[in-house]
Image (cartoon, rainbow, N blue to C red; front, side, top):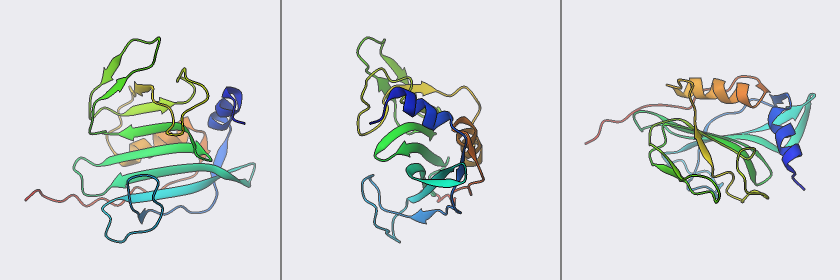
Length: 171
C-alpha cells in the first residue's frame, strides 16, 4: 500500500532510466495505449531503475503535441496507476484548486505547473493523481528545459530526447 512516506521516498530516491526511451505516436485521451500512426500526440514511457535494478511499475511518462505553437508537454512520475507528480509546460486551460480547507486559487493558462502528491492534502490519492496545482517559478521556456527540470526534481539520472516538434501554420 502506498503511504505518504513511500511516495516521498519514491520521488526523492536516486533513480536512472532503464533503457533508451523513445517518443512514439499514440492515441489520447489517457487510458488508451494502442499505437495510432495518425494521432497528433506523441507519448513516452520509461521504466526507472534503482541501484541498477529496473523497478517495474515505477515510470516516467510524458505526452506532447508536436504541432501546437508554442509547444505543450506534460511529464508524470508514477508508480502503478498512481501519479506521484505531474508537471505541465504551457497548459492551455485555467486550473482552479478546489481543495477543502484551502483557499481557492486559480492558475492561469500558459504558466508551467507542478502537481505533487506530497502537497495534496487528500489521502489516499485519487486515481487521476494530485489535483492541487502550484505554479513553477523557474523559467521553463522549452521542452528541453522542462525535461531537465523534471529529471532534476525527481532525482533521475539520464537523458531524454526532446519530443518531435514541427509547428503547423493555421489555415
